[in-house]
Image 1 (cartoon, helix red, strand yellow):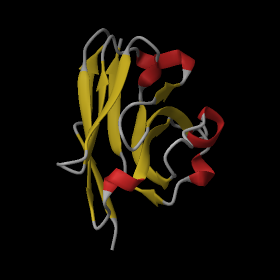
Image 2 (cartoon, rainbow, N blue to C red; image 1 turned 120 degrees about the vertical axis):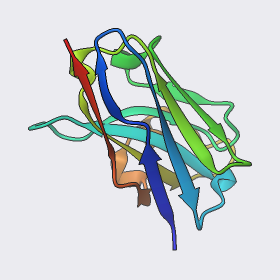
Image 3 (tube, rainbow, N blue to C red; image 1 turned 90 degrees about the horizontal axis):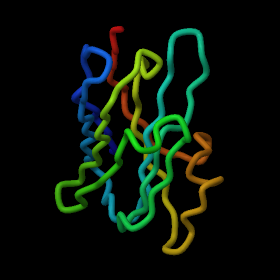
Image 4 (cartoon, rainbow, N blue to C red; image 1 turned 135 degrees about the vertical axis):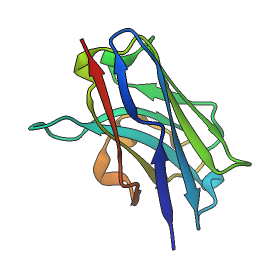
Length: 130
């Protein structure tokens, strides 16, 4: 059985930083691209960032470019989202997700599509105060 468990969320002031972690079990992450999505109250879930199975390719939504960094450690079966210069509009529940892709198939339009993802975590709350 596959489980993705996010951690690291919390309350932070604007301009602060948080690092989210997503630990996977029952799934060899080396065969999966991983994504982070978020959902703010009253809004639809949106794509934040994705990383290829090797870690060599990444993709970010424009609103977080230069502030957020996605990374992964396949040996630890863990994916990270380092979030710096946080803004109140970053407040949301953050979810990690996994999608199986073959090498060379890391397309931005594919990895940003939440409906492509097979496995999801339960989410972790990030709240940024102004």
